[in-house]
Image (tube, rainbow, N blue to C red; front, side, top):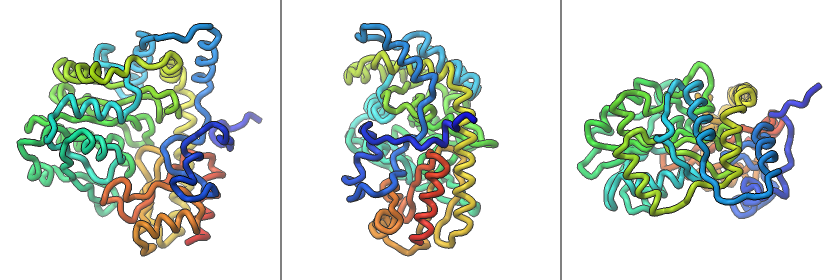
Length: 388
């Protein structure tokens, strides 16, 4: 019987994987099971590794640019998977989504301008705004009666000022796992367009969406939104290849693209590394079958989590609509955030991401990465259950 590539327990010791080597620094001990940083303990697709190995048979690894074939593979993936037709001139290389965020903020605003950030959210949203001399305009996401997080258009409208220049969007959302609907994105886009607010949309988790939900690329909503949006995309999360340090920026608007490219030239991060270009093309061209198996595996793990959570009085869990990140509501345990983190480390032996690191609305929550073998997830939940 063939081995299940998603359920193999892979030893990452000796690879300098930050999830493991930073345990003592972050948690004070190396004995925790690390389930924090958002990469998968699942092997990168064979098609990617084989393409890189093939390229290494050539004896020269010099400067190279992203090939037309690499961009074409990504364009074909997005058209097939998301119904969004991109043009190669809209795309440019970036070493990471976070680097793109900083570059786009500098390109589309001035120091002292306001940037809307929805709380809770991926921590670099906050740091990139502050470190680039802009002001945070926080908008809290709220859970409805069904546990789904939503933003409030009327509240957003009331907070906008003439200094509000950018809205940072996480779509699908990390850490709460929302897949924003077409109606939600349309209303948000219309508000931004009316007030001259540019949208920087982090869509790095766009391929990790569970049926019946469907990712809607922000720039696909309308002509106006297409001309008002900077989309940040890439293969890192989809194919577990963050170590290749490659993503892309999609800017349909010639005006916004010129502003962004001018800033990108000032940063001068170049066109990336040859092996990254090869990996990106191989993933988008040949990774479809692997991705299908991955989503089936992640859906099974999400179901394991849901069944477990129903047996726990002190853990709230709303299954994510996307991502491999579980947003655990631990407020019923009754601990402060520091005590809660210590409880997970010392009592449960788990290294998770504390909710407070995602903003004040994350207080009392913990984020768990379930992109692991199912047996590893079950072991973690058994540990946590015993601790509770």
